[in-house]
Length: 227
Image 1 (cartoon, rainbow, N blue to C red):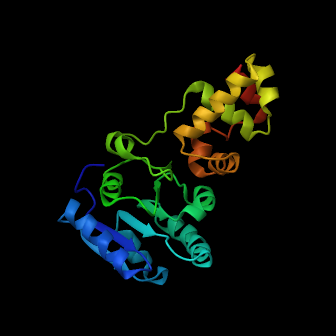
Image 2 (cartoon, rainbow, N blue to C red):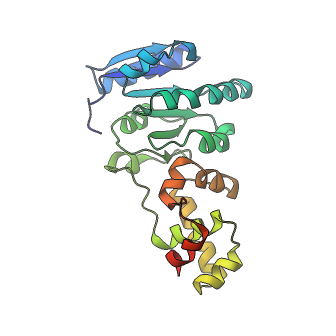
């Protein structure tokens, strides 16, 4: 997404200083953008959502507050699938955020991300991306398409794991060693910025993961794809 494309941007944070910083971040990068600040999710009316093309949502807060945020964001996404969403996620909410907010048109950033990193993400067409390790640097600056570019081998392994296959079973099917299959799984997790098997399965079951791995396929067709 080119610089200046977003004409109206929704900014939300429960902390006024953070909201002000995010608003200035957007204006510095795109002076012609109109900022639509909101102080609560009740302000995100269908009309307001229809006007905006970008929303930056800071989830910083107590655990119970973030849980409430997640419950309210799902219906908002269904009302406004056209919006490019950027979520700033506290460290303790990584797993839940990947599971519930990794939409085809969303980007997850740590709430410690710098303003330059946020600006880079506002220019991207990419969606379904998690940079919760905080290492977006060249990746955010250089992505021009919405793709995670998993290798064929990595995709094969994750698809089979999504269907409940163990490393041993995958090794036997693909005629590879357990070490090779484990290395391919770990390589995929690094690309996706996932730190644990729990986060990996959360990504697999997210809309982006389902699309990337083509998990709408039936079990009988999976072996045809991987053999």
